[in-house]
Image (cartoon, rainbow, N blue to C red; front, top):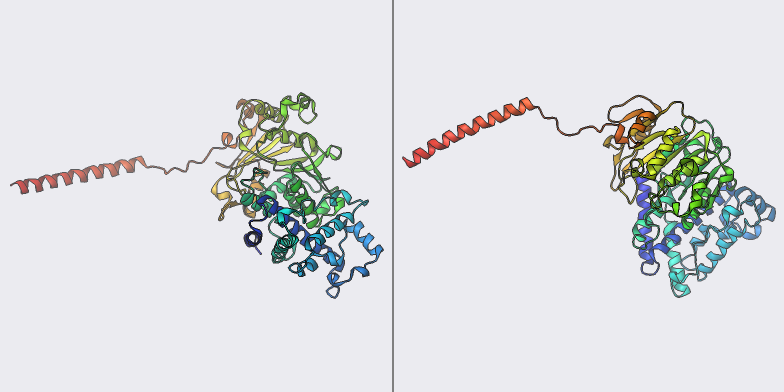
Length: 515
């Protein structure tokens, strides 16, 4: 199934579920039930598939819970990080969802049991609280148990109807896409997380390719604002888990999205021992300082959000920000994320970060930070991307590539915003594999490509006030129609001659009439 078909089916199913629960569940709360149920279904299917190991004669879902031996359970917890009894599987709950009078309490017990199975085990940190946002007893579902069960059943049966085949082969980030869709349609007026924009798969693929280019292996991968985890997952798809020695690391400030990222790790086959997703404010309370440095950093941090900045005078002494000698503006935290990423980057690694274009030309503190980055030769490339790549915003973003091991003092500027760098779809522009490959080729080369790419020495950038805007260095192609002046003059002369002839003819007709 193509990405377009998968997305259409997902959105249609969400709408159908919404119609069944409309008027009862607030839009913002509704998304928790959809995402939680999606996760419950797929974690159940993955667990059963792992137990069955491809043996079609063995149906784990049909087994009795009493048949499960404690040693078998303990072994699976060590391997998968959690345990699900046959009766607790999504398929068995969905089968009787419409008639189960105890559905809400049974679901709550199942979710608690799955999380509790990891208690005291190595996987506890990554399992604890996964279902925290899925409150089956909330009055938001209805005032009576019957109302709660009816609406829970509607969500379960709706998710059951989705046909995506093998989850790992999906062309879309199911959870990221579903969350993005839910936010745009139900939370726009809620004042909650309205500025969240999830990274499309095609952009994630480009970011991953840029960060990993030229590296045969990396120690670990890091995303300081990881959202649904789509960028980390794209690294795994692009590079392969066996080339990543110590796993995947990320931090997310939003609790729901933090859970989303952990869910995504599990559902894409990344074991609990291979990822570490932390909850908290990356700028003020970074959680992975002990694990740095990272050979690959990928990120799409929030654009121009406010942060405490200079209001806290101690931050200027933070080793992440101190080298620049200035803090990112209080109302624009973009460069705070950039400096954080740079601080966590290894001497052999590369960081690829999606950035708001304004940070590359604005003055003040942002100019001083750019000066620090350029003078220390950290800026490897700036890429101007096409507009309307992200669901919910038409902003044409840029990609900043940082490195601590550049072999020269030039910075590569690439204008990939033109129509030959994207494909138009119904709602958004999309990068195809061919477009991504072309950008990677341009990034790898030092050749000047008229109107598209140019390498510029840092001394020239300094002369331009440390402006890092692509259009400062890459001339924009003049798409205005070229006018042939000689031909135009000839056409004007012919027109004037025809007018004179017509005027003579008109004068003759008037004389004849008056005559």
